[in-house]
Length: 180
Image 1: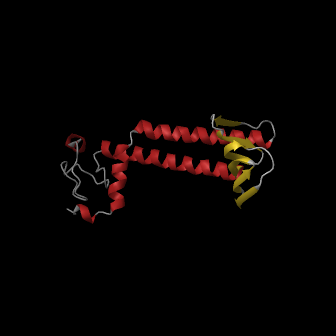
Image 2 (image 1 turned 90 degrees about the vertical axis):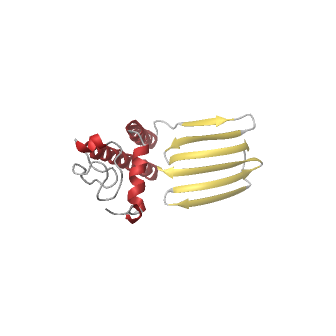
Image 3 (image 1 turned 30 degrees about the vertical axis):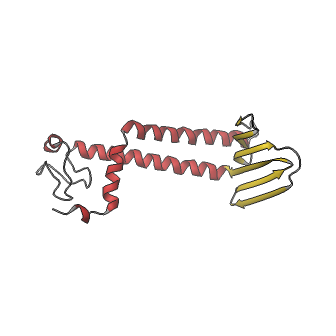
């Protein structure tokens, strides 16, 4: 039997993270990521064909405005403070590979915005979808291992030793599952 300190930390923490996430939460995150990806693709197609440009903004009485908008160039997040009309007095812009972040100072306010081109925006949503799918599959494997009587930490077969895993030393929470 190995001592718990001999087990790499990454192996121990992964199983504890999976135990803390219920299956419905993993499915909900996956479904949300899928909806975001499909909505992003739809916005991209509609904006590229100039059929529509959309956005949402929230304004406060103190003249703070926060929101997002889409257009042929891509997906943009913005924050405006004050009345941001007129010619910019100063402008800072950082552009990198189809994305940019800019800050403009105008006579009566400030304007901050970030734009991601459509390929980068859809690529980012695809990465989010991949991580959500990986988490969901890992949770399904974890549930299957526990159901089949394997150790939740290392996957060792616990039919011969239902109380404790001989491979990693983890105590089994429900010995009746391992004995089945």
